[in-house]
Image (tube, rainbow, N blue to C red; front, side, top):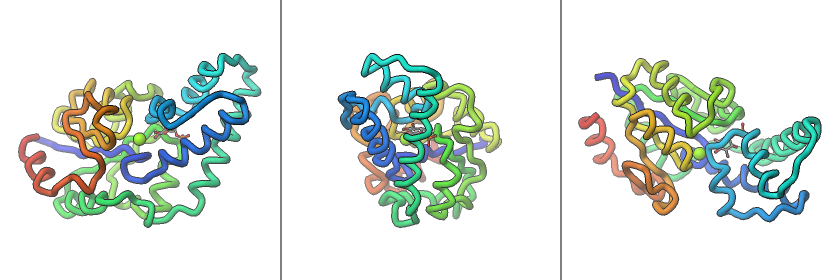
Length: 218
Ligand code: BG6
Ligand code: MG
């Protein structure tokens, strides 16, 4: 069997989910739309455009295409200002242990992210070399929970779809992995990720023995 390990980026490898939240929160405040971390859960794994649509729906606002695009740009500029100074210190705890374990064993690894900023972030934190392929927000036409991003990743890795593992912090991402028939690993609060095959609060909870067993079972 050809196995593959696929990682979401934001909120799994790096804590950029917090930066996305801050940037959306700033715009929401400007527009007078109530927005908190709970509401932000529905923005995780979701494309920039879809997030803005959701925000405007929450505020019951309809706007021109020009205004919509202008807000998309200002949200991203704000987000970019947060990620500008990122370096490897912002890789989430426990992640390197797992990435190194897989790399040492030549296990094919992919990034599967909805973000158009994914490659820039990988470069900033020095992880570009770890991934055999990067499938990002520029490569997909159908956003999570559609499985497209992970199916492309599997194909590019030459991996059998049912022998792929996906690490995700977003409900939409877990749904995408499950629909693809991949093994889904939820990173975050189990109440949010109830549909995942396995759940961990973060990577520090993942033992290498678990990864080893998983590989054997794929
Ligand atoms: C996902 C994030 O990884 O990327 C979402 O979980 C975000 O919150 C999406 O909206 C798109 O990101 P970007 O960087 O293209 O705006
Ligand atoms: Mg994520």
